[in-house]
Image (cartoon, one colour):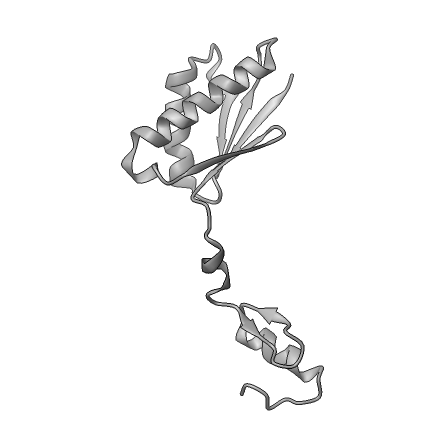
Length: 128
């Protein structure tokens, strides 16, 4: 029996709301076939046609994100048996808080980690 995992990207409140929606939308014969654990939902695939079941799950997730104003920016990404539902990060957001070593371009989001790295160059005072 195959299992599909829906990862809600570290958002347990979203996962709980989506879990409730899936229980209503998918009408499982056995409610324990759709299990919520923290920010992930595990769905046992009881049907013979895995592709049709997966398509129905994607439709359920899509209908949920489109119906709720708070979740309209969430994007659905599929990879194998894992479906991730999250607000996609913009590349410029990822680089906003990155600190760089002036000597070798080493990058770190942590000032103390960068300070320790700079010691490998033999100059403790850079950037202090």
